Length: 317
Ligand code: AKB
Image (tube, rainbow, N blue to C red; front, side, top):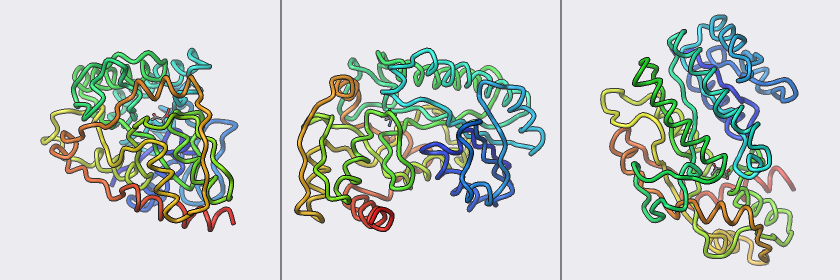
């Protein structure tokens, strides 16, 4: 049985991943790591142990790892792409200085580590259609630069020290449970909230801008599956492309209109978000993940839309 520490358990991915991991491995085997000022809500506190685990404090993380005999760390501490552009030094401190501390703890205490990468790790020079697993990665955002570094540093710890580092490149993640904060793909979550509230949606991304997106249950499945994968089959370790759907604002708008015919949308393009979106893939080729650890998503745009609308109606109305 694994003993898992989730660093960033109160964030967009962490809050849902901690619950899913507890269902699989048992509540007492999954520690919800958090920072002061972002304490877990009651259900996370009741479902299993919780501990302060700040990526800025490696000694503290080591103490938590020893206390709970942790063998697997999900390191989810990061700033998303748009907010990172306004606080580049902090983005680097959390994403890379913090990662370094986590990897050192993992090396000393023999833990496996998952630290997500992103479609943001690609850049304008990357082939945009069916973006290959191994290709040009020259991003110009601090988020992208830190994600490429995350992949390389994780590979380095694997090759040099034998630390079992694994990760995927997440597309934009869509969930009705926890809101993202400061990402380029956030519009694809916000649009559902507007549709359910009966408000016109003002889209900050231009019509025709394709990006990979994924429903949160599939993202959680990817995060758990890659850490469970048979190591002898893995050719890659970090930064697996994982894809499930790719759409532009008009396509998701039409998907929602199928169920909410009165829904309206207009465009007010945000230059920063748009320039980031333009540098990201239209659609990734995820055949390596499919071949090396049997990755397969469950949700397409229509299935996600039905589920999002159902749950947001229960939550908001
Ligand atoms: C963002 O938009 O910053 C994130 C991502 C795709 O990594 N959702």
